[in-house]
Image 1: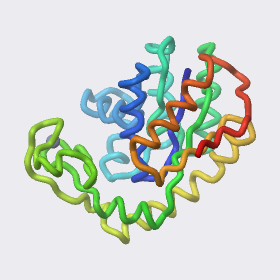
Image 2 (image 1 turned 60 degrees about the vertical axis):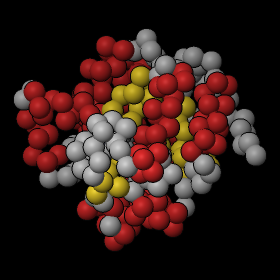
Image 3 (image 1 turned 180 degrees about the horizontal axis):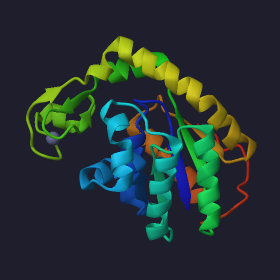
Length: 229
Ligand SMILES: [Zn+2]
C-alpha cells in the first residue's frame, strides 16, 4: 500500500515515517533527499534544481514529479511512504497520474494534525546535530545522553528557520498551500486525520491502525469514520 504523511513542520512526519519503515517494511520516497543526491551527482535534474534548492526554496513541480516517477518505477512493488511530496494540488494530481501509469495507486493520506501554538513551541525546542543535522526534541534520548544517535556527535544547535518568527511564516505558508490538498484528498475519500497532539507512541499506534486496516492496492477506500479514543 502507498501512503502520504501530511502535516506541518514539527508534526513528526519524519519520525512516523521511520516507524512505518521499521514496523511495516515501508520504503520512504523522499523527493528532497533524491534531489539532493541528483545535485551531488551533477545530473541534468540536479543542475536544474541546484540554484533553487541552495537558496532554500522548493523547486518547481516538474523535476519533483520526474524524480518521483523514476524512483517509483524502481520500487513500485513495495509499501511506500511519500515524504515531501505532494506539496501542491498540481503535484497531488500528478502523483495520482504517475501511480496510475504504473498500475498502482495512492491508498491513503494521513494528516497529522497539531495546533500552531504547540508547533511553535515544539519547533523552538528543536535542535539539530551540528555534525549530521539530525533533528531532536527534548523528549528524544540523544539530548538526555548528549550523544547523536546517527553520528555520535555531541554538539546540538538551533536551525535559523526554527526561530519563532520564522516558524510562524513557515506555518502560514504551509497552511495556505495545504488547504487545497486536504480538500482534494477528502473529496476522493482518502484523507484520514490523526491527532498529533498526543505522544509519539500514541500517534504511531493510530497510524498503524489505519495502515493495518486497509488491504494493499485497494482503489476505493472506505470513508468510514476511523476516529479512535
Ligand atoms: Zn549527528
